[in-house]
Image (cartoon, rainbow, N blue to C red):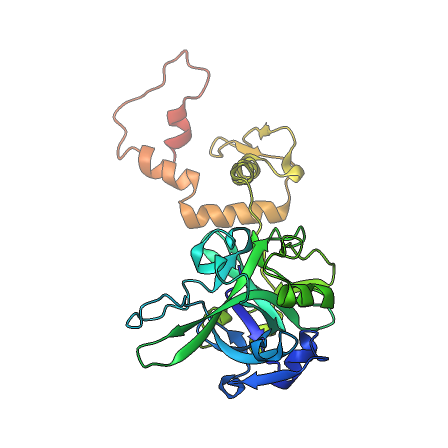
Length: 339
């Protein structure tokens, strides 16, 4: 498929670009041509056709509108240049719109390059495709004439396409038919009506066809200028499997439940030095810094153990003697009963 191209070649340079500089050439309606970096269907482009007035030996460089309007189209019908801006080369001998044009309405279209879009889901990234040495590309095309409602004879053309080359298959499944040398341009332009063009309508497999990504802004026909062919850097997004997400979550949970290496020692419980002190549990090596941080944290969060216990278990008055003569071991009340 070819729906956008760059065409800023001066009409006077078209014969050399299409390998017909040795022929007699006439120029028709070339004043309608407007050079552009972003040419779309409906635009006037210089096209090379045979000159019927010069016994088939001459050529004509004529501005035609891109997008074929068949001659049998009604005069009152509004032309749709996007309907047939391309024609599949495999079926031009079968469809009536193209079959009748093969004998004498073949032409050449010279451009600096063309654009193609790479689909990635809902996104489309345009690429500019051209020859490495910046020589013009020459496309095989068919043209026709149509009388509109105003009595004007309008010339239009369509670019032939073929299956994509092995190098461009990743980008699109179709590409324009590129005639890469003088032999192929002469054969397409001058071949007899009985000629078989199958050998010409093939993918262009030469290694001098190159490409690079350009701004998506050129997707709008109104966007034009050198910015259209300025190379950009395409951001590539890595697609990570969902299993990696769960692996990260599992690893994070393990870290949260894991005791730091510095504290992976056996827990020991110190015996209270006095009846009023609670047993103190230490994990790993006890340092002054760790104990200070623990004390600060504890003081912010809740009152000390002895103070809390005193509030909860201190009796307002002695109601009786809880000891018995046979008690030799102090009870818990003896620890918390004293103020």
